[in-house]
Length: 370
Image (tube, rainbow, N blue to C red; front, side):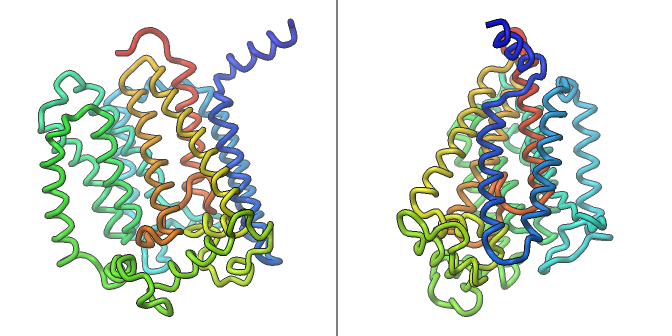
């Protein structure tokens, strides 16, 4: 009994939420196994393994820090301004990949600022709404909070990163919902969205972006050109059937018919090899992680921390729904990664680091909600 009490005391002192850690590491390992099953090359597997190790270290580090200083307006504004600066700097020295100037090429790795920008957007909106929870019914809070998100949205959109920009937009909508904004005000939001979409379609969207939306409406119309990716993805998901083809046996992925298998279409690659049963288990693990995040958000001592946790859950839900939806042919292809699973260091480090902060916030929460 004394050994158990000592272990329990150690867990409490380290301020680590193991119920956050466990599902996240299982999802990361699922992505790693999927990457290892395609061809003789171990490029993605090796690099992703390194990123997972780095991310886990950052999770543990973040879990031991008291992050209550993030409640200070000066700290958040400074971080927000720095992220804006990085996004602007992309247009000057950014690395162009697949038509998007979204990366800083830093030798061993490439940094995509839009990933931490989503995280900073959550912090800014959490700070704004937490200070105005009493007067949240005022419609001006929709406009002011929208202005914060718009700075990030417009810079990400013109990289151009359509998927990242839409994630920022839906994140703002989601945080409006969890902040307690009256539902009647969403008629105003809906009107603004319709006008914005019409303007973007007529004057801003590039031909390939319009093609993706048209392909969503008519998915089989251009399967040899603009609709090829979505078509191959749906084939991969369907061919997995109930139990899957087995690890390394996915023909769509192993023969490289499935494009961007390690990032944009990793769910399709996983579904082909693990089937319906494996896909359901994966989504259940995601659900456990989300429920734990939401539970932590409901048991912290300040509205800022609660809104941060709920915002993090909203961000993950957006990524999961869009990624799985586009892999199954239900949504347009937008290049959205699957949290903790898709290849890439920027999003992986950001996601694990954010979980570490949430873990620390829960352990450091004392007293009633303020």
